[in-house]
Structure formats: structure tokens, C-alpha cells
Amino acid sequence: MISERAAGMQNFIFIVLIGACLCSFPPRESAGAQSSSALSASGDAENYARYVAYFREVFQLMSEHYYFDIEQRDFERFLQAFEQKIYPNLLLEQKSVDYVRWRSSAYLVDFLKQPDDFFSRFLPPKPAEEFAKEVYGQKIDLGIEGHREGPGFAVDFVEPRSDAYGQGLRERDFLLRIDEKEIDTMTQEEVLDRLNPLVGEKTRLSFIQAVSRRPFEIVVESREYFKQTVFQRPTGVADIYCLQIEKFNQGTPDDMLHFLSQLAGSQPKGLVLDLRGNPGGPPLAARAISAFFLPNGEPLVYFAGKNRPRADLDIPAIPQAFHFDWPLVILVDKMTGSASELFSGVMQDRRRAVVLGEATAGQVLLKSLFDLSDGSTLAMVVARGHFPNGRPFPFDGVHPDEEMGPEHKDKAVFLAARYLLLKGQ
Image (tube, rainbow, N blue to C red; front, side, top):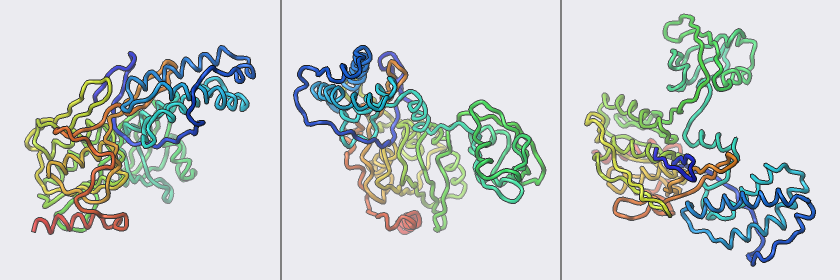
């Protein structure tokens, strides 16, 4: 990941799509002299002054780093709305000092940002921590999925980077006990709850191994890991394969290499990359994946923003054995966002892949997290993506070479595979 410091604190850079709600404000007018109605009603001018100072901290960060220009007069208009409307209402609801500060800051960010900016937002300390884990694709649990079946719990999936996988638990293994409690005395919900302990907790699992049919017992720890995001899907067409990438995270390049290396032994006649519904992730993950299909060392994209140096990304150098020259089709839709549409757009621009589906989200924007003085976080769009020739990624998204609407959703992979087969012939 690219990293820098914002106001002396760590700023994580990534691409991802997040929804945000907007707050309505009174019509634009001069802020003028501040009314004392809210202050006299509360009798707490000291807290009020602290709120305003905190809002100025948020506004200053946005002024310095937000990709789009914002106006001082809009900030003053917010202060007027806070004093006359937001603050009195929150006082009547008897909200805490923290709640007033955080909720009002969220209003401020929603008010100042662009209407079609679905990423930038204010996050209090706890949500900020969860948000960072989500956008990075990080989880903290045992990484086990499955269902109750007979006297036990059939394992349907084990996250490859979890402790349970490292200690030998696999798909189709059959859990009989969790710690000292028999599974046949628990409901599905109780089992799943025990498979999701707090970070650092250790859990004893007793199970029957599917392959050997022998009993095993392991002690696994709930720890942080990157979720698997790449999965092989059937195409229904011989010698044409499909990899679905659900999201980009730091583990995605390793997942891709694993599957591509496996497929190489089958000598594919074509590959479908399904990026539909992929909201993106770190741009460096898209950069790493591009190296499997494009000439190494060449410029990939660059990001340019306000008050920041231009950030150039090139295609990394990897061993020749990991270069794959199969014909490619990339499936996209309107939910294909940020890093996933960056990758799609570059592959299309270089004529390395045919893009099928719908226009993408139009969110090839560099985004950052900025820490605030109370441990809250300001997530912001800070730069826009450009092709190496200077052309920016369009706000209306990457347009496919061939349209394929949502009515073909269930058959899209098959149709893409057939396209590759016919193109090869």
C-alpha cells in the first residue's frame, strides 16, 4: 500500500465503494453574527466552543486534502445550521457530548462533499476501526463456514489464511465438539456464535477428517487475516475457465497466482474474469494482478490530487513463468468500482481484454483515511485516476466493448466463455 502522514498521523490509501446519506440544510445565506439561542438554552458555552473548534479541524483537513474544492462560506453556513437547528435538536434529545460532536461532524462532511461522492465520510473511533478492516478485507474469527447436519457440523469452507486452515481443517470435515460442548446439543446459531470468538481467544475443535475418516483435535486461535476473494466458477464451455474476484485486498494477488498456476496445467483456451459486484479495494492489489497479463515495468496509472504529489503506479516485475497470455474477457456491471474498474479500464485500454457487461461505477478515485484528535477518522477522496497518457478515468465509468444487461446475469459467464471460444475459432 502507498502510505503517508496526515497531520502527523498515519493515512491509509485504498480504493473502495461506500454509501453515505446526505443531510438537508437551510438555503444559502450569510452566516452573520451568531445567535445565542442555543447557548442560552443549554448554558454550556464551553462545550459549544469545543464543538466549533472540532468542526474547524474537520474542515481544515477537507480543505487541504479533499479532491474537490470546498468553500469557506459553506462551512460558515454549516455553523449557522448547527447553532440554529442541529445543536438545539440534539440538546432536546439529551444526547451526549460525544454524540453531538460526532453526529454533527458527519453532517458537516456530508454537506461539504460532492453529492455523487459515496466514499467520503466521518467515522467515530469504533466504526472507524471496523471500517478500515472492512475495506482492507480483513476479518477476525476462526474463518470457518458450514451447517448443522445430523450429530455435527459439516464444514463448507475454511479461509486459507486462518489458523484453522493452517492446522489442517478442510472443507467437508465434520465437527463433533467445540471445546467441551457436543454439537448435537447446539443450534446452528449457537455453533456459529462459538466459531466467532473474540480476538485472541483459543477454541478446541474435535472433528472427523473427510479424507481419512479419522478423528482429530486441534486448538485454533481467533486472529486477523485477509479473506479469500478469488474463486473458480464453472463456465459450461470446455477449456475456457472463469475466476470470480469478489473484492480486492492484500491477499488477492496471492489468490490469483494460486488459481492461475493451477489452470496453467490445463492449457486454457481462454479465461473469464468476473468482476461484477466487485467494489474495489487497494489500488496496489490491482497493480499486482496486472503483472500477470501485461508487460512488466511499464506505466499503469497515476493519481493526481490537490496539494499532493502525483502518485505513479507501474506494472511490477515478476518471473516470466507467472505471465499468462490467454485470451481474456472481463465481466463488469454498475457495481464494479474503483480498483476493479481501474483494472478493467487498463486491460481494455491496452486491448489485452474484451470487457462485457454494463458501464462501471465511475469511482477510480484515490481515497485516504485521516486521523482526528479524538481518535475519529475522516475518510476522503483525495485524487483522481488517470491513464498514462493523461486521460482521466471517466466519472460515468468504464464502458464495455459489448453491452450485456442484467437480464443475462445468470448466463453471463457462459456467454463470455462462448464469446472467447468463437473468437478463438
